[in-house]
Length: 110
Image (cartoon, rainbow, N blue to C red):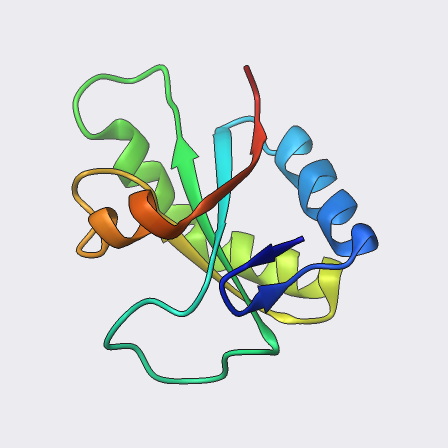
């Protein structure tokens, strides 16, 4: 599977999907290429934009993302053996329009 300049093997895709199924707050995952105006590796990096849901009110989902994103990146890096960047997929994200236009939905809980 390819999104712009990111390639996932069938094994990596299956591992990411399994991780999402086990991570109850994740409701969608999008694969994306390198966001504009960012630095760092491209080909070895997996970019994922996640939609987070919560039972709380207000910004509870965004708060969950902020508190768990580093842990999720570490779990995904250990699972795929590649560097993984996890971005919030919501209007609050500074690159939301880019993620919405160029991200490829790879998994949805619904």
